[in-house]
Length: 207
Image (cartoon, rainbow, N blue to C red):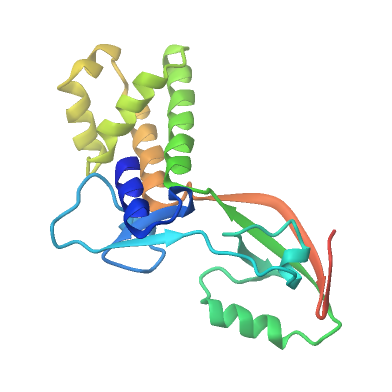
């Protein structure tokens, strides 16, 4: 995956660090469409890059807001699932001078971050099972789980390779499946930070 990202960045002449993730055959931020090891000749790859914050803008004055942040809710009103225009219209509907509390959600920065997060959870799962941390074994478990459609396929794959030696239980494999499924579905992409901002329409105040 790193090589693919680098080739894309080299071809279009921008730093590879600007790539957040890539989706297959859709421009939408759909975590079910994240590219993986299976790509086909007629697939379209959509690159999702870091955006920018306009210099000397209101947002630029607030260093707590970072590129990629999502507005989870404003004054206890959930904005999850709303489009950009709907969020903008809602903010514009708040009378100038009124104060509001904005809850921000910070995404993990790259697909590598998602993988690393999953690997740490698998390592913790390993420790609970055999009381050791093993990055190489965690990586093997992660990779063998990625291509499987359900826990039964995973169990069969583990039983037919050298991993069988460890005697992983059904409960272990179900938890492993859950961790990797979360990564594939995007549930590991969002880390909710305990950050709120108090904003007054027309000017900004940081709590």
